[in-house]
Image (tube, rainbow, N blue to C red; front, side, top):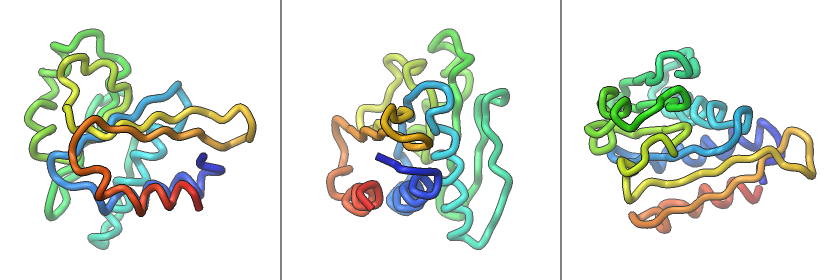
Length: 157
């Protein structure tokens, strides 16, 4: 459980450095669950590691925001408004999945384009504690088990 926004930010900061080119985070949850907050905090942590600061708006209307870092691009995608997987292809996500770090909100819109080795993060407002989020992390393949211990520790803290 992420107990408050500061805890969510600490979680994002622990996740940011373990991400590399070709990684996809699938961020699921209801509207207001914290998907954009988590994405924003990950992007800002990576930018700050390079001594940079940029405004990180939600890509709700642009669908995709791309952040160019020295070693990798980060694609922040909000697929909520898409109605078919063909629209995903038009965004250029297929190539980005292989070369960039992709943070994808509303990943159900990907359908069969979902990368096999993606990390799935489900966020939901906790029924037991105001401003807290229940978080479930899962994956089907990839080397996430080796990379996630500091991230899991951040959730527990």
